[in-house]
Length: 422
Image 1 (cartoon, rainbow, N blue to C red):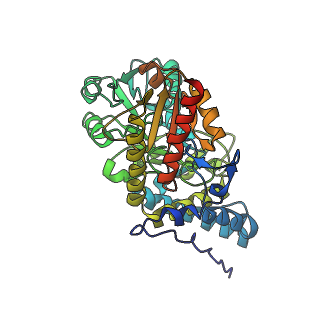
Image 2: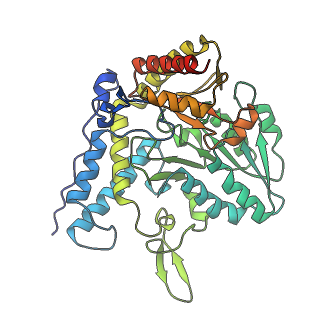
Image 3: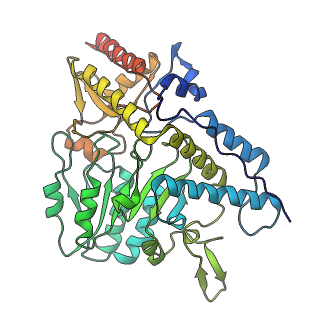
């Protein structure tokens, strides 16, 4: 009989009851770096978060002592890798409170997950004359796939507008529904503005009319508690690299009945039960949507990242990040010539801004000289930029390992920008 020794979970992080940002920062090797002779102030977390040593060590342990391809083989390493891979799936299930582990599909990221739904559900159930509702706040990843589908099928996309604060006009959303409405795609949190959308209310309204809803959770899952059963969403997608995990891994949650009704997105190994040249019988979910060798190491690393965040506590993370956002907002609104873009009453830790007379790329370049890393550009959200009549913004996005002192460094660096240009 083969004996398999399961690896221990990632080392526990700081308990939620005692949020110690200095202790947490010690878990992140990259935060000790200097950039241009200044301490790194990493405020580009909406693009990609950093990775604690607990996750790095877990990846090294897998690659060093556990690596093999999963499924089918009976040798010890393959059995061990399969067990660890499926344990990571269960960890993700509990993290988002999915009803069943088979409702959790590993993808390469949010974009891949949304495309999976477009191909697997949209191409099967959306046809000529049907309508898809999206919002002005969507990332391109939740716009372009649906445009491709609409062009192929002869469907129409309807768009929910936003007010000057960057909040969805829910009355207008409800007015978009009619007998042709077949699908809704909405972001949980805007990557460009930080707006937290009232998705539970939006989902309930859509479901009352028999319309399924996909939620882009890329900017929500790393920053707040997510309960897909409470939300009652049909699909929920997010990425590992924004969640202190590896790149190249993400999650699609889907209700089991919907996943079972969908056609596969990709064909190949593992997503089949039997293959002849006359007919292929597809595997059960989630395997039906996981063709080929999956990102095994990345999935196990994502499981370790979720263990790490859960040990801290998502409510504690959200509270600390909100405090950072509030403090940064208070400082920035008092700065002449600085405009915050996106002032919704409910926001996650994203602060997009413009400095009068200075191009965002120049802002980003000068901030980098001060060791401050922000993102500049349209943030793959060009409809948002068009709505606010700006070509681009500078975006500071906070994580739980950021400190108030780093907010001060950001504000000081913006003042330096103003001195150079004004």
